[in-house]
Length: 367
Image (cartoon, rainbow, N blue to C red; front, side):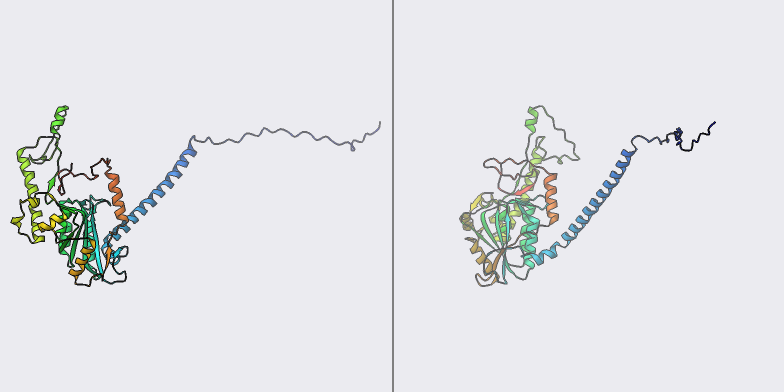
């Protein structure tokens, strides 16, 4: 029996044993975990951005407050940096400071860039009066008037000025415009100027009869019987009318005193006369009545200013001063326009400005 050699035969490898490897157990994820994580990260980043913005705003406001506090000192140094040369030698070290009063005269809290801001005008007058280079101040009036208090503030600033003051009346200088002019040492009016209108007006609408017709009742609760005397939803009593009229006459008498003092005319010869009954005069009539010193043009007003300052004619440069509007002024103007939205409708013969009910004005009557 032959011995069989199996060494030359390759042993077939046995197939690997299949092991039943248990599948790894995964942790059961909580649904929505990734979403809330993203929200947390986003919220944290958002809070950082808000914090940075708030800090920046506070820094900006603080800077603005410091700038406003130092505005007076800054304006004195930069008062004529952006001034416009109107006439005269540019290299002169003498200045005739021109300050515009154009548009309706309003207080600081109610005015816009289109009107005469009493606070800014007073600041310009004060700055010009302190500047050693200024020989005289020339107020250029082109205004129908405005608020009683705002007009009086500008008049008071002119009366306090130590430098000579000349008022020049352009197209119109009625009521509050003339009130301001009365504070000047000399008044020059163009012969076609509209001026005068010396008087006071308080405007109030009464719609009591109208709301009765449409079946609406106005209910008013007050602490005293006169608290709602200007309320339009109720009939105005004779006693209320008398009180309001007394307020008007009190302001009117003060107006006449200002005119009498400024023009050196006896008070008794002005009060309750045709000259002070609210009528409008042209420049020639105002000159004949003694309300202005002369008729002329702007250059005549400049000559008057140089004469009062006792400097040679045409020796000073005539510069138009401009208000220094800073960033805070811009923010306040923006806040005013956003916080008090108005719809303006311009019709032929109408004006964008309307009297605020209950306020006293040195203005001609408006519809």
